[in-house]
Image (cartoon, rainbow, N blue to C red; front, side):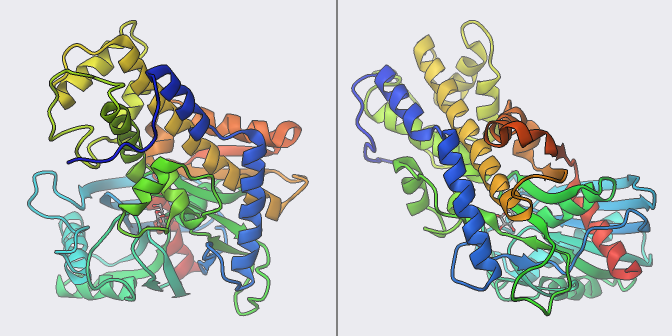
Length: 453
Ligand code: GLC
């Protein structure tokens, strides 16, 4: 695949300096982003045209007293996870059992994210997983985390507005996903499984943390996708919605951002150009691809791996051939000769004798992109805090789940430092809580709220 040089540099050092400039986000820049985000939230809430959908969830935070055993289906960007969750009613939660299945078989036998599959087939696959998970004839309420933008008409009626994260499954957009699930469950004879609630994964994460921590008022996912929700005390001009209510911002579509040439190139080649601009800069679905574009540019200018035989069918020539896991491993490679990165490079490209400076360039690029991702996410959280409590007089907890936040080397620390840099002496008012399995647990809580009120 031949691609054009994007940005001309005259040496590797000069290139790294320029990359540093183009991916760094300063504190004043974060403040501008926060302010603009806050403005766009207001636009979305008042029904004005803007990038933030501000979708009602029909859910308030839980009391912590909800109890019972619920089935949860967490349909994210990469896997479907089915869990049996026990809510103890004292803020305590246990996952009794759980299974996770990829939506795309690594062996290539199926792919429910591609245009070859339909919405019905996808939900049939979900029902299959449920049928294999529970005992036949069981009666149980089910909460469903569906990690895409939906227009909610009720807690059990959620219409998919449009796919994000490069999903292409046909005949699903515009459909009620709870109905699709209900039909698939019936077809599988699972008459005792009653889907009573649909939530976004950000909302589920907020619910999961709020079950034990009453200060939680922001929920976010930094994983395959990126999005945030918050607890709105009073959405203006929406008197029909009871308040407080959690609002799914669909913040991944925020676009008042300093996009550079690599961001624009990635966007142009994506499934939906000009959409999900923030998500394309932050989330795990795109981070590896952005880094690949940077590295490819350096390779094509002869600044990296010059003159050495290299497999032209893999990294950095093959789109989406670099994952956030690879980037994380590069960032954490503290060996003297960066030998772990060298060994990955050999496997990925066939290059056996990289220079230390070249390996260092890989590590620096990975780190620049990961740090930018964390700082952009932090800036949007500050935008939400400005909306909720400009002087930060109250305590706030931001609940975060997702593979990037959990596993990317340094990500959680970078995000925290960015918040500290922006909020300075008020930073202590804001706690960031890693909410593992928030999406799955929150679906069970949503089901409990649906049936217990
Ligand atoms: C995408 C989806 C959003 C979801 C996020 C994280 O941005 O549009 O609904 O919350 O990914 O999975």
